[in-house]
Image (cartoon, rainbow, N blue to C red; front, side, top):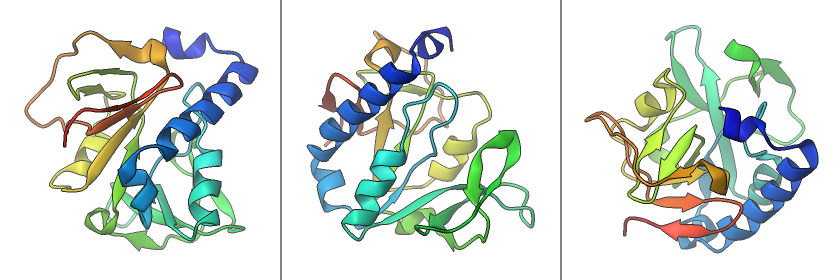
Length: 176
């Protein structure tokens, strides 16, 4: 977490702009009509520009939302102008939950503490994205700073590999 926390607000903004530019070069992003992604908080790559870009081109954007009825997370549609509420851990989510099955999303854009060039992703330890991605057959894009890329990360059987890695320095296709 220290690597991510070392970026100033202006560096995070510049990184977000560079990430969006690299993301736009990824074919799965270019053709996606729907995308699941996170709302960047704290030291994560900000995703507001990606959400705006998706909405501008008529694509659906969905973010993880805590579902009190089920006790876990589901993907909820973000509608421009809708009110947001604070979910667990203070992460914003749509006030009115309009759940979208993960399987219906063309791509999933996920954060992480670290990534490697073999498609491994180190999450935050809660397993929230791993559970959301369980059985997901679409394209998974890891989003982070170049400083978060390691040579090799440990992987467990339940981990879902990423297909693309997009940082402030590059977009890397890992899996066909």
